[in-house]
Image 1 (spheres, rainbow, N blue to C red):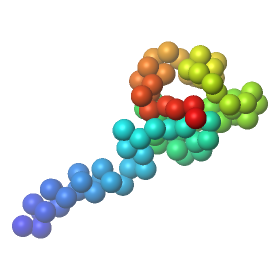
Image 2: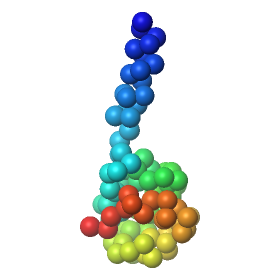
Image 3: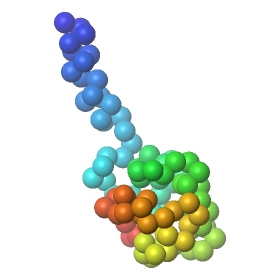
Amino acid sequence: MIKVLITLLLPILLTFSIGVHADEKININTATIEELDKGLKGVGKRIAKEIVRHREDHGAFKSFEDLDKVKYIGNKLIQRNKKRITFD
């Protein structure tokens, strides 16, 4: 009985333990390294640090074209996350 409950509840608990859900938007201009790392597909700490570094050096992102200028970011990564990213 306990194994059945664990099997049924574990996926639910894991879903709620993730910091950012798939339908939640990430503001690329205010997100922390941790928020970028957890909230965007294919973005780990290294790319998240590059996004923040670029933002600090060049100012706020206004478009996906601006984001494409960040080291390690390309069209594929942008397309994968387009619905998640906001510039507000």
